[in-house]
Structures are given as C-alpha cells and as structure tokens.
Length: 462
Image (cartoon, rainbow, N blue to C red; front, side):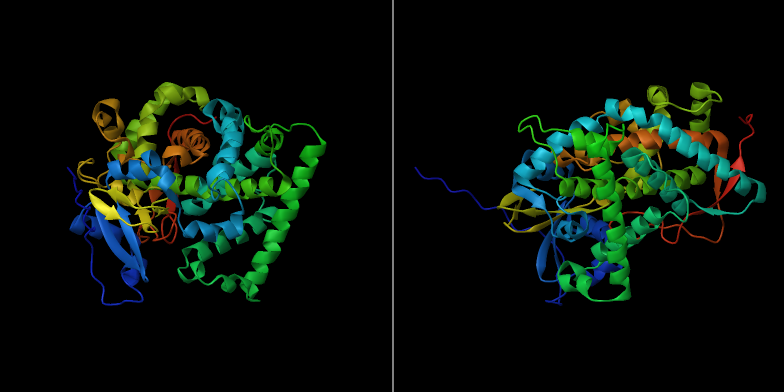
C-alpha cells in the first residue's frame, strides 16, 4: 500500500507591491522593530523579501537549534559573510567545511576558559589605567562618551592579548589604521548595495585610498610580528599560541596568510561586540538603581576593596546575571544569516533550497513564550530556578552549535573583570538631553554615543 506525505505549507508573511525592492525599505528603516513586527504579526517563521530574494525570519528556539545545531550541515554562512571576507580573508568566521573544521580544531584549545585566565592580570591592569584616567572626569563633572571609552578599552585589551603591544596612545599608527579599517568595513557590510556591487570598493575614491593605506599598514605590522614570533620564542600572547598550534588530526599549522586572516578577525570581533555589551550594561544599571545597588553590594562582599580575579567569577553570580540580561535585551550581534543548502521544514513550514535565513537574537530574546515582560530588565530571570526548563536557544548571544563564537570565553572573562572594577569605584549617570536608542546596524551599539557623568563611590580609595 502506498502512502503520501502532505507537503509542508509555505510560510506566511507580508505582501509587497514593489517587485524589485520587496520589503527592503521597511527593513532598512528600522530592521529590529520591523522584525519584531513580523514575528508578532505572522508567527515564528515569516517569509518576506529583500529585493527580489525571499528571506525567512526564524524565531522559535527549536527552529534556531535545528539551523545552528541539529541540521547545521544544511545551512551555510549567508551572503553578508562574503562581504566580510573581503576584509577578513579566509578566517574561522568565514570558512566552511573541512577548512573551517581544521581551523577550529587548531584554535579551540587556546580559547578555553582555563587557557584564557592567564590574561586576567593584563585585563585588570588595563582597566585600572582607565579608572585612573577617569579621575579627572570625576573631579570636573565633564561627561564622557562611554561608547568611545569602552571601544578604546577593549581594543587595548585585545591588542595586548594578541601581540603584547599597547596601542592606547591616540597617535598610535597601528591604532589609527585599525580604526580606519573597522569603520570602512562596518560601512561596507551595512551597505545593501555593497553586497552586490563589489566594484564600489575598487573605485579610486579618497575613502577607498585611505582604507587601502590603512590596511597596508596593518598587514605590514601583522606580518612583521608573525615573522618575529616565528624566528623567536613563544611570547605568551595569542599570536604566538596560534603560530605554534598544530591540528591534532593533520599535524599541520597555519601559514602566514591564514594567521593574518585569523588575527584580523580577532581584532574586529574581539573588541567591538564586547564594548557594545559593556555600554548596555552601564546604561541599564543607570536606569535601574536597585539592580546597581545589589551588584555593588555583591562586589563589596566578595571583593572588599581589592580588584577581581578570574577565581572570583564563582562568587559574583549576580554580576553574571546582569551581563546575561543586558545581552538578552541588547545582544551585541542582534542578527545574522544562513543559507539553506537543501529543502527543509522549520516550524512546520517549507523552506526551499537556496533560501536566506535570518536568525535574530533581538527577536528570539523577546519571545513572549519564553520571556515574561520581555522588555523589562530583570537579571534574576537567569537564576537557575527561573531558567529551569527554558529552551537553550531562547538565549544565544554568542550564536550556537558547532559555529558558536570562538571568543565567548574571552569576552565573558573580560566583562566579568571590567564591570566589577568600574562599579566598585564609580557610579555612572546618564546625561539628560541625550536620548539613548540602539543603532539599526549589524552590531548593536547606542546611536549617537552614550553620554554619562562619573561619580566616585564613598568607599575608601586605593
């Protein structure tokens, strides 16, 4: 007896009377609120169009798990990653298949928590220098832009971890070149047209020439440091670790070009997203003084008047809840894409081969089925008692599955040291007249900065 299987239906979604642009104008105007609207209006799987290309928003944790985990072999990096490849080369963020597996096997041991704890002292020393510099602002009452301050801090930390070099000086040639490349890369990645018109990057404009010069400066510095490490001893930094690393299965290491690509990726991914997360933590604490008081009380009890160490992470759990809640509301990377290689079914709906998939932490982290009062700031929702039974992929600020962010342990360690040090010594208060809202970009940072004043704690100074 033969049986027939009823094909899965097409996913619901908005109609568009613009065949060439589709829903692109609404998406570009305010992508996060537009995606929230689609989820609220149509459900957990929504079909819409960006240009002429069909795109599927996937919001339910079970379906996110299927895309990133259980059926991840059917989903490859989306088209926007090819734009990033122009800047990052063949790095672990970009590659697929066996090449990616080899890179990940080679790098993984150096990004485990136990391996990274050795950078704790450096992170503390770098943050202590920031606290000292902030003394003048505490005296004068002059506001700071926390976005700029946190970007500078995390950039200094990642450069010391990678190379054992200090680029904190404003006139650092390497620091200026890196800033130019980062800004250029962000603009090109954000540009919808740049994803389809590659020659824009080759036009002899002043901006393109400035980028090419900055990239040449960075490449020369990175290749010089690679050569120095190869001819010398292990310096104890991540560059040395990667140079001497071997894949357990093949016994091969990385060549100079591959090392350059990994270093550029760690530069970019290793500082901006962490800086964004730190900014949102201080913004949310300033808006919720009771949570800020509780965090300060925990730090006082656990640390007294000393600086934190990696060993203190187990005794400062409320700090971790604050970080997790901040990244739930304002995930540093709020949206990313995949491409379906073959047909699939998600949420009961047919996903055709070659479809673009949008996964949005900004949407899933607000899913009302898993988050009560999703717009509210409630760090205690991450306590074990309240988190019990919540699907794993209801919360995925670092992605998930085999391609989970390789730097998640580095970022977590950094935040668990930086936040206590700042909260121990200072209170940060929002400046009136500067409304704060997230910029509608691929990374989530406060639009137009985060202007705050610095106030000393009453506790004894060091």
